[in-house]
Length: 382
Image 1 (cartoon, rainbow, N blue to C red):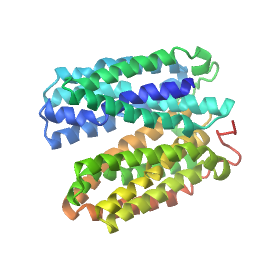
Image 2: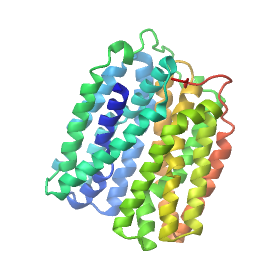
Image 3: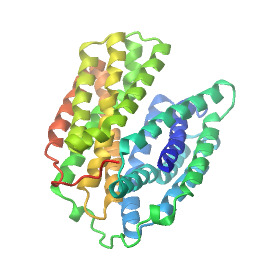
Image 4: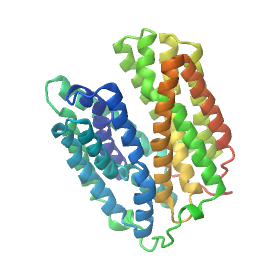
């Protein structure tokens, strides 16, 4: 229950951050769409700090609690600073500093939960789904406050959620978070990587490139094919509900078929979804395709974080999670945003979705090479 509360409280803050930062930068800071794109690109690239700084630091020092607390407190203090920042250089500077401290939180939460599951049993998906539900709560609360004239309402929701997460984190003992005697002295993470882990990271990178174009441009695609604003909200909600539903069953899929097949299922389902958007560009097709978000995020994400635990070098689980977050969700998102935006602008959304489908198929083929060592799994029956 404490892990559920920890994910729930922290992801409320994400619900107040992700949807509303671009909106705030546009309305309050007066940035253009191009300038907002640069800010978001910088935000994604800053995640590489996790791979080269936070991951190795945590694995070498075992200071997981201190890093989590520092990340949450600094994030709660820095996010509202956007209200005091206007020019593009200042906003990019703030985004870099905020990103440095936000980066370690989610990978460390995943590492903490997966370590607990490996020792005590349980299912990652059934805990992580509460994070997805909390995202809806956070975005709804922030939207309600803004709609009722509360200036900076999203910042208040963010701060309150991070304070609540810190309270929940305080209920964990140091032994539950840190791992006495588990610190790794060898600093050469890259030399210890196995072939399957590197191949998996390539597949995750390609998979994220294929998906980010959809995440960034789906609402514009809906505009082009004549979907009303009301139905846009319904479509996004269908996706989140589908994601939560998939996460509920991921533990069973992993126990029966393995994390690699769950990860591959996510990629194949994504390919089918993007192909549907390409060949059926109607409101009905666009909304029906949202059911496949169960694969694009639900299966992909749970399969990916589980494979990290199975494939990462011994004692390097934190760095492994940071590698996934940095190379796939960070660098992959940046590359995918640029490429998909250019393709959509030059050739249109249907061609972009064909490209996304092709990349997802390629990622699925690559994923089949990243077979984990026989018998290794982080999941056991409760």
